[in-house]
Image (cartoon, rainbow, N blue to C red; front, side, top):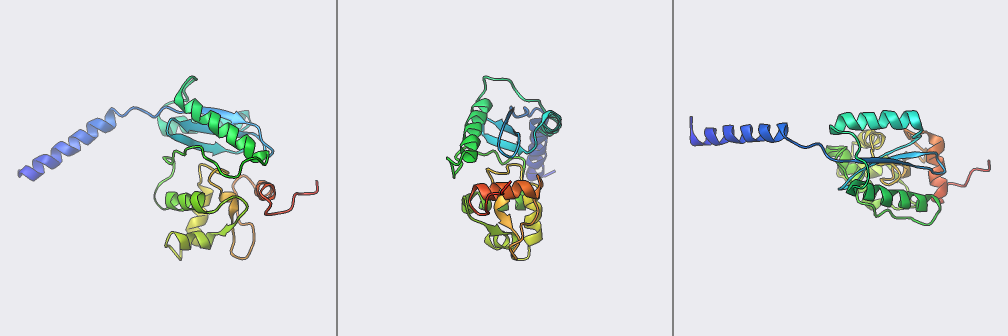
Length: 202
């Protein structure tokens, strides 16, 4: 066995030990009432991790269970830095729905997305501001993947941070609303709030 082979074996063993002893990330959960219904919020000390629509008791319980399986531990009680992030996120979402905030500043934890999806969502968060729209093809072009409009749609559907990462601002090239996991009525409501569509009459 060469020196290089010995080094590689040692590295793999070390990585295995690290993986086996990795501590699950601490995270916290809360809900906030909005004009589009209750939102469930999850956060780590790094930032806001997840926004869940329609977070009634049953949906919130399902989301917390799913995150517990994914992250390897359940939500921590306050006081904890993750709850500080939740406080900021809740206040900013309340201000957004009141029409007092157009740009979110709460830090984001991107660990529930990766690869192409993360690239597209970061581009969306950074460069499609309040009151504007982009098409799926626009976003594909912006990340240098001209033939990936359909894949952009998949990325929007998997967005763990809707509203804050504004997938509701992404539409079809022909002007159609496209899809939206929480429902097209919710998408219309968010775009009306931002002045892109007229407010519904009733």
